[in-house]
Length: 184
Figure 1 (cartoon, rainbow, N blue to C red):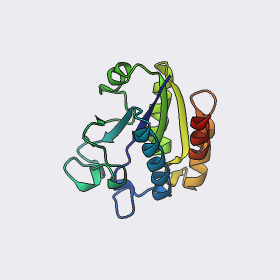
Figure 2: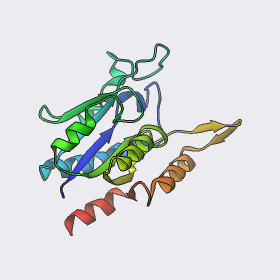
Figure 3: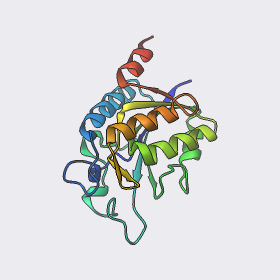
Figure 4: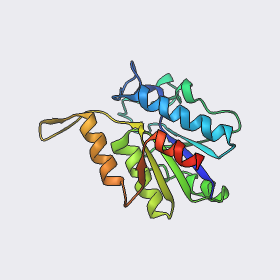
């Protein structure tokens, strides 16, 4: 069954100078670019997810700002699908489910940002909806978090979320591992 690439929230506000800069976003995006090139070259389906804030007090992804735009390095082509969402779960109040059904595949390859929020929530929802998910860990990025006055480094957040998703919700692998599996 052909895979569908799902690129979640690779938007300007997550990059250096953005309103919610993530750790290693450039590296994650380089890997997302490799995936995108592979899918385009092989004429496989691609879906971009773009988050637009709707809360009055939102601090990033404000509609109409450059920060909310999909990053130039992975800009969608005119014939590629962009799904707009307003919640961490890419399926919530969107037509993502209907669009994926029209592609006649239940095999998703997921990458993007933030690992601990939209990537996690969308991957879990996709599994609940019957999709087989491959999550590309090094094509995802996150940030430092704080809990009970303790700082949790982005690297630790990333490892914890990838470990939690691996097995039950997704096969979590690297970009290189995915590319090698596509050659076989």
